[in-house]
Structure formats: C-alpha cells, structure tokens
Length: 75
Image: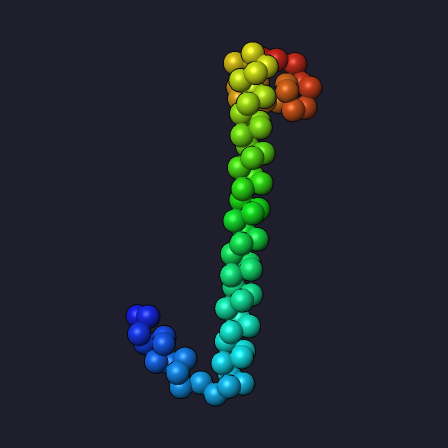
C-alpha cells in the first residue's frame, strides 16, 4: 500500500475514527521506542559479557561455558 493510498483513506475518516487511528499510531511509536530501548539494553549486556571475557584472559570462555556458568570441572 502506498503512502498516497493511506492518506486517501485517512482523509475519508470521521473525526472519531481519526482520533482512534491517531491513538493507535501513538501507541505504535511508543512500542517501537520501547523495543529499541530493550534491544539497546540487551546489546549492552552482550557487550559487557564480551568485554569480561576479553579482560579476564579466559580464552576458552565459550568452550568451557559449563565451567564458568555452573562450576562444572573443565574438560
């Protein structure tokens, strides 16, 4: 659907319908921002994990994750 088609449809709405559509659009943008913030937080957490493995000198972190996460003996 093109932008022009959407605009044409919006122009045909009553005031009460337009209010509902506007509210939906506001909620859509708020949710989009929340998802972006959550993704940023997840990326920061992954970056922290990466930095801790680099700084720790443990080059086998991925291979020995059971040891580092659960305390199992190294294999």
